[in-house]
Image (cartoon, helix red, strand yellow):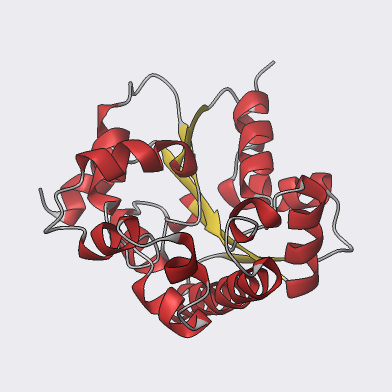
Length: 218
């Protein structure tokens, strides 16, 4: 199926992407509830996509699964982690598209997650106002992850949690910078998020960009 046909079939999809800790999941849940949208969270289907993905199509995912925790988060530099991390490489993105095409079309869908990379989403956009990339500052990202209590979920399973945590944070910071550059290079909508912004303010900016105010559920 060519990109023009795909874009037409995915015309009811709103894409909310960006860096880790930017508040994508929170905003997507709130927007979906307030505007009668179906929610598709890409984080929730990573396990399913791992099972469905042909190893030849997902070589970095296959290699990652076969590593132990120290090999994943300690024995490689943050730069190598970034360059080889399967979701950052767009592996299994075709399964996201398959999932979205299989959803009912009776209501709009908000798809959210860091896996929605600018280069992959752009060809699927009928309207550029149907996508936004949230770019958090490093301080906002660390604060958000700390408040969730999730900073050590991965790092704590290694033999050197502090160093693994620093590697993860550096990798995520580099990823966020790459996503911002790629979105801006393609003139795609970017919303910067910092510690001065409330959830309500961030949501208002996304809603305004998506032009949803006329679709509020009564």
